[in-house]
Image (tube, rainbow, N blue to C red; front, side, top):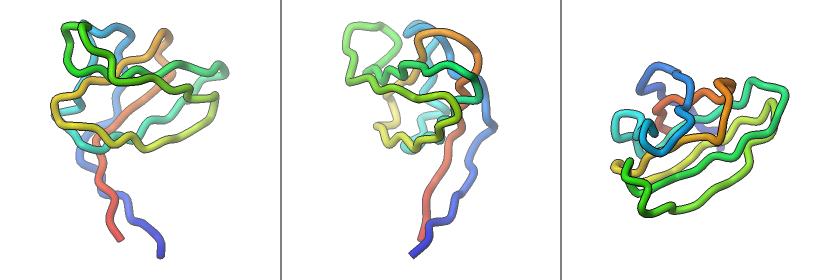
Length: 92
């Protein structure tokens, strides 16, 4: 069964620091795409304080991933402006 993408927000550059990190309007699912030529490390944190990192993963050049998270969790990347994110929903 194929899934359908429900766009819930405008695609924006993912911030580069935990202080500027975004919850993508308290999204529970974020589509991330790396439009650059270098891989990036994506970090999910509990909030903007930086006290609790939930986890990290690599987003390779040209790769797209769907990140499921809690509404209050925030997302940032370790550099560059080539990783874009948007709040989405996935339906069957």
